[in-house]
Image (tube, rainbow, N blue to C red; front, side):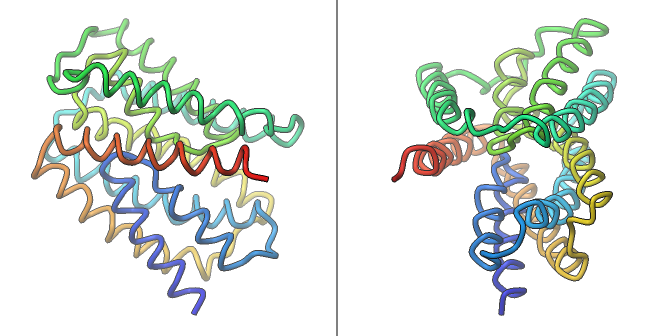
Length: 252
């Protein structure tokens, strides 16, 4: 029964994640509900082990239909990998609890900015090129990658927002690009969890298949309906993240 429950959650997470990120909003609570007495690191390992397949497959799906700026995104993915690994190491030394109360405030600022700037991310007009774009994209990868390793919630949504706001991508191109960066940060975290034995492969494999199926559906829907649809889903997901992180930070 637990396997069916978490596999369905992985399917839905892959669907949401492929459109705009935020799959962890679904998958992590489902894992904690199904296995309340299990060490959190093991559940995070299962989450990463399943979700990396969905983000990787979504990257491939998008790359066939959306022109990705590989010369900037590949260095950014490398920076994201390094940042995530450093963040995952640091969280073993320094507690990340202070971010619980800060995160809803940051997400609220992102949501308000997106709603106020009604044209934000509707037109794909990259502001930079060449080395300059690669450096800025790498700064985004390093920063959000570090956050993903250190804390995590909303990583995909932060990638999308910064690619839109700083680099001038529309929401569709930003979402496609974010999948590559998120795959790199997931891989870094997965290496750490596997090396410390915090993973259940017998759950990861069926959940990964479900995650890929959800990813296929989500990416196809995003490609079919375009940037306006992705922007709408982004607003909904960030709103849900605000509610969830606010509850986690301030309830009780």
